[in-house]
Image 1 (cartoon, rainbow, N blue to C red):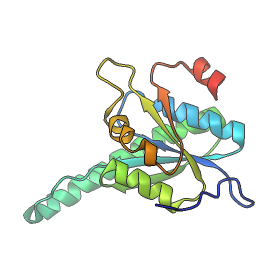
Image 2 (cartoon, rainbow, N blue to C red; image 1 turned 90 degrees about the vertical axis):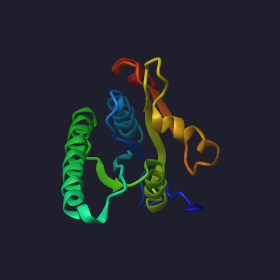
Image 3 (cartoon, rainbow, N blue to C red; image 1 turned 60 degrees about the vertical axis):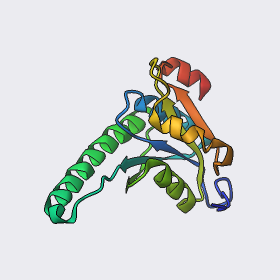
Amino acid sequence: MSTQRRSYETGHKPKCLVLVDDSEEWDRAVYYASRWAIRVGGGVVMLRVIETEDRNQQWLGVADIMRAEAEEGANAALDRAAGRANGLAAITPERVIREGDPTEQILDVIDKDVDIAMLVLAASAGAEGPGPIIAMMAKLVGSFPIPVTIVPGGLTDLEIDALS
């Protein structure tokens, strides 16, 4: 992936990509990204990845129902996150739903949108570790095409305000 970023060129505006998942701390990433967008006059792209499972072809009807339910859940999660961003920053974030491996989908979304300047993730504040996405991403950060910001899940709104 060698797509040149164009975030700050004339006719473009910087955006940050936020992964909206089922973690407890997703709100911290959305909060940070929304505050950042206000500060730089940028935008937010919210990504929800539906992880696919091997589906047996003889159960195609069931797989279609499962996919429809997963898309409905993804839209509901993005509705909550977009409402939060709009309430914080009066912005309407772009919404993307993808299916597949989260890391591959994150990289593909970044590759296809030359205005994405940063990926924002939130880390779990719990003793079990930062979370599976951040653990996977840690292996790629050195070769990642854009900066990755990891927001500690335990930060309050006021603490994030001071940082963004």
